[in-house]
Length: 355
Picture 1 (cartoon, rainbow, N blue to C red):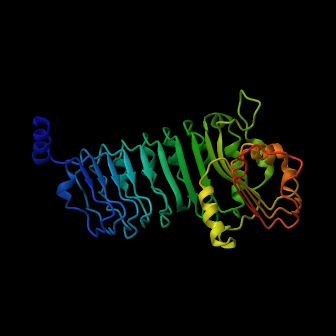
Picture 2: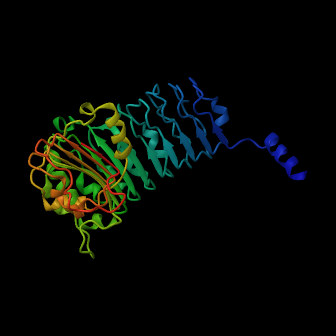
Picture 3: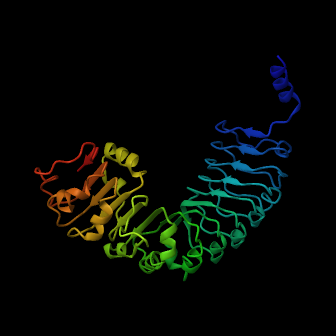
């Protein structure tokens, strides 16, 4: 009986440390006075268009605001009094910039800006957040990365999408030397426009750094040529691609958008498998390069788009296809046979082949 009474008294006299009002269709934030003693605030999936000017949140550790599409601006002093904030999620909002007060978030460890399609620039104050470990900028339109990105020495996961027209306006889009200072990186994803010629040289510089390859466990890149795959090496092993290494590679020039060319049913199935790691897309290919088969032997998902000479999928080597769970073949006009009938595959191979 005492335990039940104690719980009731706590609810009556101890203020809640959590504010969870997601998915309520809110058009205004709760009164700022309620923020003072909170440790966590969740206001995702609402219709917020404004935030308080300078909320006092000395104990706040987690702030979740994703999927507030009407939110276009963050007040200049909004982050001024959040010294303990560790997790900040502003993904899928319509913000165009970050205020200078972002530099006050010295304790920040996870920063999610995924899907902020109007965000094109990062402030130089970014670099003072030395404790940042996860920084997600996928689905943004960043024009360039500031030199200060190299000061985020604790980063273990960095994902960024760069604007397709960035090279028209900027001399330096990726400060490669600064990026290579991120020696703790375990996951790296850089999304670029496949027609950007500047990327050819940049990706070679990134992959040529041997110390980085030793740390990375996941790598997602567009590789303009097959030969660039030769740059991936790991010391202390004879294998180019150890079993623990995960990847999403798009290899080949002039990538076309797949979704516009697929039937709806196939599109939905592809989206499901497209989230898998260990994924290889080979586009506008010719022959069956060794560099491709070395990656393919560890791939779970294989997308072959517009291969000009392949007559049989087995030409890539039956032994290199045994781990595949999903295979998608599009516009391979010379293809006549899928699998060599004389080869017996292990059970469970290629759960969903689509041609």
